[in-house]
Structures are given as structure tokens and as C-alpha cells.
Image (cartoon, rainbow, N blue to C red; front, side, top):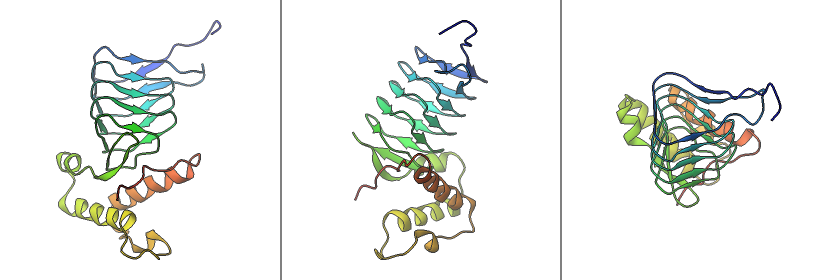
Length: 190
């Protein structure tokens, strides 16, 4: 690696980390970051250049390949894999045994060998103080985006309520996944 190479993994705040591997960045100019107040259970792996935000729970055997971003309040069940360069949105939940090979938008629940959308993470939203109005709006937005009654709609955004911040947030999360490096979001399960 050469002299002067900095072995930097930034870990901030309270953590509970049990028998976990967290790798430093693959470049001396970058950093692997693990934020505040995370629970990282046994046999988890956080590869190089990952960005792990705050208040995240990784159950046993959560494996993140390089350059993965996991936003605030995301949760995983056991034995999941997130392929490199993908993004897991805030307040999302990944079901046990899942393989993530596409981005997971905010507020979503995904599961499966090749993870697919299973709906909103309603339990996580309720437990984290989202109001009934916000949850109803997210549910309506989810239905309009992923289960539209009108298959000939020109633009899904023209059907969405733009007055609630969480609706803007979910739409932006989906838009970002399509713009960044031509990623796509997990597919909807019919």
C-alpha cells in the first residue's frame, strides 16, 4: 500500500459492534464511514468505502460490498447481501436472506433472493413517529407509482400530491436511483 497510506475508518458516537469486519477505504483519499448510534450484530461485514449513516440496525450476517450507502434508520434482517455501489434508503427494511442488486428507495420494505419491493416499511414508519397523514400519503404515492390504475399515464409525478415533504422525499429517492450511474430500484412484486 505504500508509506503514508492512512488506514482510516471513521466511527462516530455510540456503536454496538460484535465480531464484525469493517474495512478501510481502498484509496488513501477516501474514507469508510460508520455514523452514530448503530447496532451492528455478529458476523457483519462492511467493505471499503461504505457510508453508513445513523440509527441503523444490521442483524447477523449483513454483508455490504464496497461503496454501499445506507441511510438513517435502515434495518436489515439476517443473512443479507448488498452488492457494491448500491444505495439503501432511509427508514427501509431488508428481509432476511435477501440479495440487493438494485437500489432500495426510502421507506420501502424489500425481500427475496433478488430482492423486490414488498410495500412500505409501515412498522418502521409507525415506530419512528411518522404521522397517520404522512403514512397515508406515502401509501397513496406508492400505489400511484407502482400500481397505477391508468397504464397509459404520461408521467407518474403529475398524479402525486406535492404538498407533503415525505412524498417529495420518496419521489426524489426514486429519481436519484435512476439518474446515478444508471442504477434502477428493486422491482415491484405483482
